[in-house]
Image 1 (cartoon, rainbow, N blue to C red):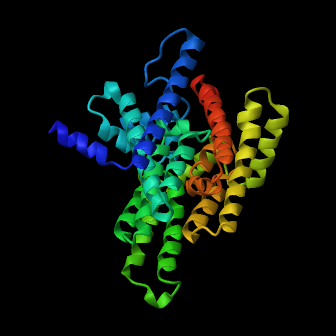
Image 2: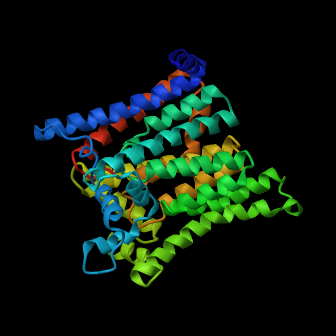
Image 3: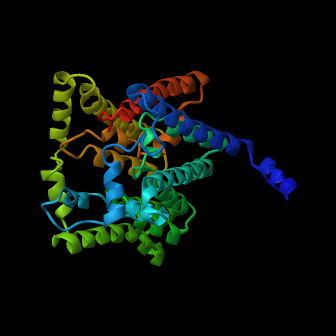
Length: 375
């Protein structure tokens, strides 16, 4: 049996082994930076669950424990603004509530591994193994990739969204649509899979409406997931759009991209370190980078489904009056990692991307582990 296992390991393509090595090494790096940051800052060795249990992470765990609450006098009432699938997954991973923080961490990291796998498969489907490995590399060391190891929704959403597009490319619309439903139960970004899947569907049909069949309906499951979330809002608070009111009143976030830009600029020029970077400079820089990636995807004539997904993800990221999470949301434009693989044919370009992105990953991971705001 041991010999058969070794033979199976040896039969795995070298490119797959390299991709696995890359994202495992990246995760080890992120956790090591987080551990030593907390240790050097406090003098105490933190538990693995405490390293990245920051900002929104405890809110997801609270929902997993107690579900949403209907009493507006409690702070937990505001948690209705967080989508339900990740807390549900945490609860499913939890045997003992005393270890629920560990369950949240495991759920996020298992999902992120699945996301890396599907990104590799998607890039290989479109291009080749070399591009696929580079796509995994560039996602692994993206400046905000620590969220793929933290108890946040990134791992789960990436796994669902990338897998949905992968199965759409294969014409497996039932899988693609079902995954889009779960994606829209994870984050509002999942809703953009509806137009994106429709674009891929008609692209495969040669843009001929007369070839439309019932498989088209699977794409609308992305909207169904969001409607379920509205139903939860209605059941808990009596208003399906409570989450929007809470975003505006509790987090001061509304649809106003111009205010988002001007607020970021004011923080960039007027705030002290490190808020001038994380709330000001970085959001503007990442918003600009995302726009550049969309423009290059059009220039390089990527498949329409990827251009559409990148543009809609970018537009959603910069649509609000607070750009404080733009660097994290821009990471959701995952086709850009395939695009970067295409653009890095020269070794010097690859090394430059690795150097710049890796340095920023280490920097922002350190800030986040210290408990300062970092997207």
